[in-house]
Length: 476
Image (cartoon, rainbow, N blue to C red; front, side, top):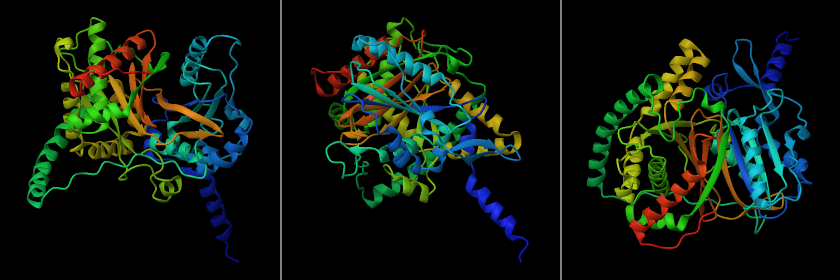
């Protein structure tokens, strides 16, 4: 009998129970930096949660073994995923608010609750996710469903893709959700293409060198100035946060885009940059001469649009596949006299320039080298500093074209928040059924979120008016 057989069986069983985590996962799950994603779904009708356990067991858990695993340390301190028995009741939270109050008051209770769960750490003794079912009507919905998922499980592309796979079309459950088609590039003649390629190679080399150098400096010794959107408070991620949203019409954004070119993301980023400047002036803090940088999250997968969960697992694109672009926020001495469209043009130019750069590749290599020489905690501190030393972060996701339903509950709108970010201001945006929702997450007590929201609305109106003419707008 082969004496090595029992050892092989043990190794196979251990491989099944214990799966190594990616380096990126280790960086964002440490004593220095711990990030979570809140995916918030607003229900169009009162929530029926009678099938929640069944839906989680039959549709959510089978998506990925990580949803039934905990993080443990291996023999050499490396983190691994370990499959465990899961008790779903421990992951379902149904808060109790006072009865008989107005939707406006329930909005306040919901805001306080979101602040609390954003700050709470997920227990390490069970899989790193929770679902919170809030059965109270607010101004925007009859109820709210919140998934809290640790970023170690995957990035927004992975986790939202997983949640979308559990959701059905509200109009026909037998049909799959569909997403906007990726923008195709216009064809060019061969001569123009050769010239453009040559120019892109030269400019790409220069951009890569300067961007990588600046990234290292920004992550180590160079910090943004304190401003209306950056308090500089040590460990600001431990401070209470406040979450607000504003919704724009995608048709209006596309009308602006058709006038200035670029993408929906360029226009939305320009609106946010202009809104930040309006806010600074309204708070009597002129930004002229101040260093203000936005960290823009970039998906590094070489795919267009969402993949199915099966395709992500097969192609090994599940997990954390992202990097950061550091973009200077345009400043001005008198924002009231500035041309609103200039902020869109500048955002478009800077994003295009940053994309014509391989700095993110060399940054990844640098992190690998730091990990090998100094260890995982050192890399986590480096990533923490990269974010901490800037003024804001911007991330975006593309949502489905059709209205979706979660367990029979039609979803009126949804958005997401990244919790645990060491910044006073973070911005996220998501598209859904003809709308773009911008989420403003601020350090509570430092940034006046409703004033900032009003500045975002004003920025959008002025940009639209300059590009397309005056029109009446409604905001949610």
